Figure 1: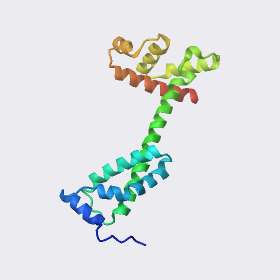
Figure 2: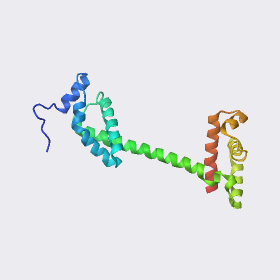
Figure 3: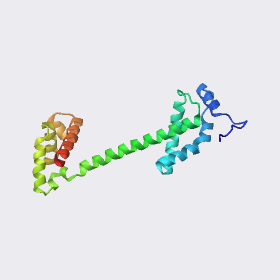
Figure 4: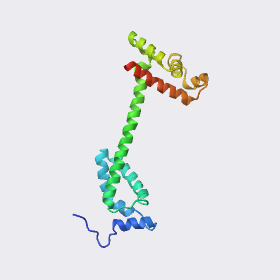
Length: 182
């Protein structure tokens, strides 16, 4: 059951053609389909503020894509764009959450706070794993955790950039965690 376009209502295709020619805008399409897009976004995000933000992002994306894409059935195409946009935002948010939780885990694990560890076996294993690290990672870990020197001072002391210190620290921590978990 398709809705017939009323005599005074411009078709989606005519609005798109005028938009591509630079003589029209997409406000009519927004008015027609904003609630449909909002409903679809709500299914993905489960809350109104995120769904409303997505509607803005989707129509912004649609305005860019319509200039280069040929669209035969706007409603179907819009639904596909909406679905893909929502899935991508959810994936991006999930990756961010994973990165944050992994970083929090790395900084909160007791294996990275050796002065708080009381288990003799774990301390011995930690020392063995530290000795197995590549030299620069081992030096950065030792200076930071045992000598309590900050990244900037380690950078100055070792003659390497702050970013390199951070890289050696992250890689060293990851290698320590993997070694200890074996």
